[in-house]
Image (cartoon, rainbow, N blue to C red; front, side):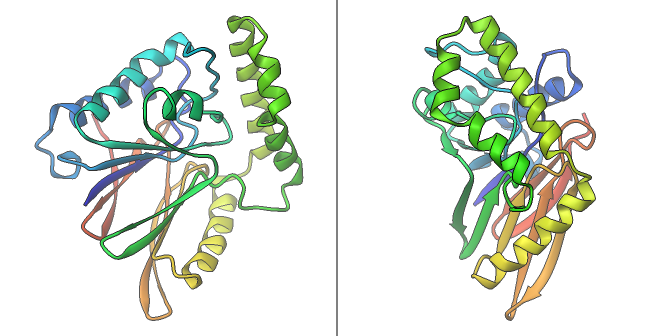
Length: 248
């Protein structure tokens, strides 16, 4: 079993360095690169904030996102299973990525079991119950009222409002990466005691891979970093995790 996990590209425009690098990265996956950690993967997990904002209507999407989505479609056609965990910037993904493209979408978290390992996956923006302001905003932006309201607006206005809501989400959820990572580690310890072998998050923009020994077993805690500064991703192969960095 081979998989790649990445998050937090915050894509807006094709001119971004993160966008260009992701295009090249996906080209390697599509073309069947001989690089071992990228060759013949079975699954790609995108753990939130892949897009800096998202809204689609009647299968129409923000034009700047069409090229990178085209890469994901080609990757899926090679047999790779693609999974999205929604983030605090990109949500309401199911109507497009699940219903139209047949990719898996998780609104908050997912768990998978590979090679006897139980793995918990989430963007990670909801693990702190004390951040009430952000959680209230999050619920509002995902409410049927807000989604329905946007559907009656012209697309250009809708995309502008989606970008504004993205900025609001950033302001409410903004916290130092180190502080978020500490909270994520504490949350992960709870999951380890409930039987999970690995916990993987995005959101904090800090690449981390740590091992813990809990209840007689080695457990893995990982945060994925980002594709803005670190260009980092997590590679899984036959029970082993490796934190990697894309350099090209």
